[in-house]
Image (cartoon, rainbow, N blue to C red):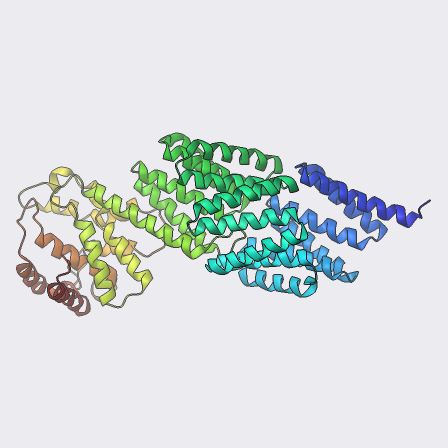
Length: 532
């Protein structure tokens, strides 16, 4: 007959094993109950090793259910118990899981430190070394070093194979798929995701199976295999539902929304993408919310809802900038650069749509924006200020949509009343953009591009350095373009005559801005580049 101590120990271990089996078969609620029972029994019986592992496994499930604070508390307890009983390997396992929580919370430096601590404690274990290599690969990928990330993932995969660790192989293949997709190696990425899902099925990891289906679906959207993408994302959605993973469900809805958008089913696309945003926000999943916001913005751009598109792009930009690091293998700078390219496409499209009904002004915003970048660089503005000027230039006349067509197309001089209507367009532009929190300070450019250095401008009669330099840049280019292109009420002036008119009105701008503008014209004439 076993002693009471042996029976109790066996009971705690059996509870842990049963909970682990439940987790692998997708019975998450039962697994949680099982781990909690194992914890209670191990505490009662003083079984430190079982307690440490049950705490850590429960922490992983709590993390998947978007409960990071609870997960961290459980994992910290696991580490402390392991240290108390002198089990360095279990302590290292807890640190490795804590490092993953640090990544998910956006604490890259803390995650790297935690992973290295895990390696110091448990480096004698090949399996642990494999997991830490994998996690250091994640850090490298977040930092944009994809070559280093690939090398670490491949070393991790080799170590998992040597150990016969099916679940580790599944994770390594998934990470290789992610970094390959980021590098544009789509065929390789698809193969890696298939391998990962096959190993995840053997290991009973439903969460990873679903992630592979979502990521494969995103590849399928890019290849226009829309039905394959939708089918895979819907299968992933069912698995995430089973697991109660709300934040991850947002990613599946995002892919389904992308499919509907690309196949012209815009109402369905808007519904699915809006659901993705709401689910991600509710789960505190910043990355998923940012990416769903970007995809809905692209939908709004496609149907000409540019104002709503810009609002969502601004929100996505804000969310991406919150991310220092994520376990989702996102290289934030690359995401932001791509997003800013989309932003430029939307503001350019909106500017063109505003001008499209007027053959006289078509192309005006494009010319002003291109030349504004030249002037911004001549004046030594930094990259953020340059973006503000560029996007402000594209949108400087957005308020013109409220000016009656008959005034815009009038062949003769405007009456004082008509002039007063036109002069409201800067403030109308700001009203149209009021609910958009832009990543750049472009609203002052829009509001003040008709202010004059001598105080004779509108709408606020600013003078001197109270006028933002970006508004002065757009203002002088706006006047020059108006002078050199034909309008309903005046013919175009030759460039030399337009320059003389600019100089005659030199009191409208600071000497600094006027001198930079004149230098830009000299560069244009000397090099033959177009600064029109």
